[in-house]
Image 1 (cartoon, helix red, strand yellow):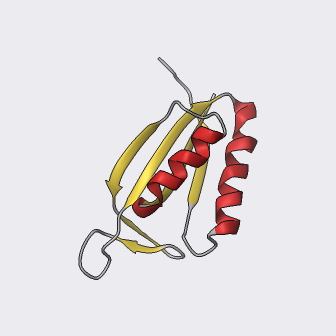
Image 2 (cartoon, rainbow, N blue to C red):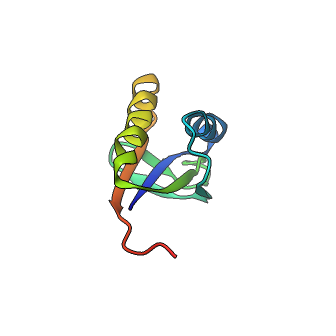
Image 3 (spheres, rainbow, N blue to C red):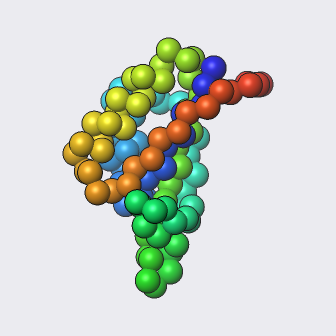
Length: 96
């Protein structure tokens, strides 16, 4: 099993949720209103000079599903190249 993690600006939430649901990924965990700064993505701190925040989407999947999830991210990055979408995958050691 792998954990797929996707970080994106909160104002994309409806679009992101729809993309993954259309691809039949309907079981997920989402964390709203996270903050952070990235070299390429800029600051999303929820304050006056960096007003936006991020959301984080987590999806636990079998290893063979990771390429499909990453392709969704690549598609979104092509469509919105300056939005700083970030995806991470890592081994999910336990799943209870």
